[in-house]
Image (cartoon, rainbow, N blue to C red):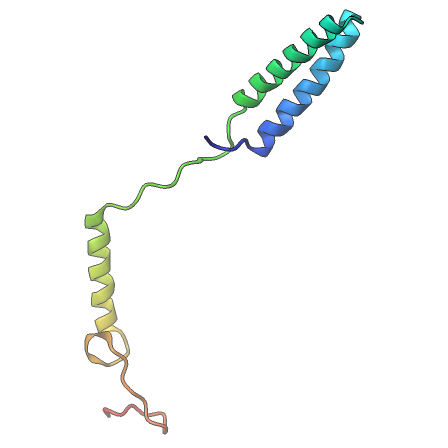
Length: 105
């Protein structure tokens, strides 16, 4: 079960507080039963509002790349490494002498 977002918590809490105050002021009830009914209905309304607030972004992990596409990309990178400016075979770096020149030249 995903955790509620900040927007869901804020909207739900504000709905509970303001709807409770509004219903208590408009109904004018002073009995314990009336206050309990108003409190329960305000919590239910706040829960409904919190659940209907849409999350702002995708909450799922991105789909993995297909294996065929990943295999071709790996082959391309390996081919480019062999062509690189390193001058070695198979993309291996050439040892450099202390003078700054390559040992093979």
